[in-house]
Image (cartoon, rainbow, N blue to C red; front, side):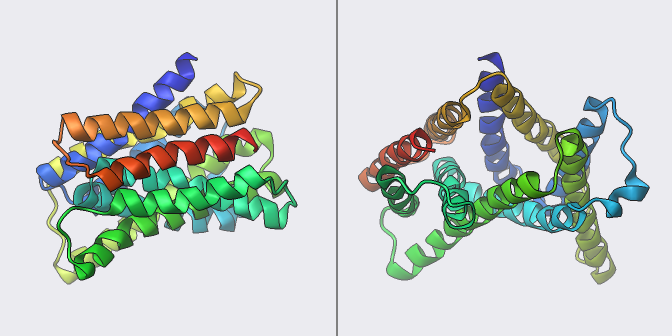
Length: 288
């Protein structure tokens, strides 16, 4: 249980840090690049196995890891922007509801069970993302712009979960899990560094030490939120229970933090959306 609590704690901290990025005018891209360098370093320090970087291209999952690295840094940027523009609760719901996408993928590709409750849960998840994203006193045009970011987070997070599930089932052996994870973080960092170099050449990069500090603060909880979740899954036979508790707890903790620390205002539709999100996670995970 301690591993699950730590995973929930570190996952919730991520949303707080993203929210603080806006308050302290942190360059999101610079911080996220540093974050992935730190996360890669944490992964390397946490394993006793030698990682053969020069032979990485020989692994069957290599190009999949490269693609996921690109998606990782893209979605992380979207989560940061969603947290700043839409609020902590919206970003949390959009990312946690994305579990509907790998479930649909599993039904289509792996012929997993199509339980009626699972289908209802997926539909409720989509409604929940919409309701939590609505803000009071918005015009139709503004509302469409507001919805775009959480929808992209929802889709992007779902693609990441689906990609990880596909590669781990088809190509990644248990002993290669650490190498596989470190490779994804590494290429997310490399892609980010390339973008920063391009910005530097164009003269649009304004490097500041506070962005590095912010990236370090983000990278440590980012790595350990995943690390402790894996440990929790290994210590419990029923992964559906772990995922359910983790997702609901992160959603609720992030919402409470958004209200208490950042004075976020939620309208009735937002509360209904959060309630539906919890119901959706319970329905989907209970029959998975």
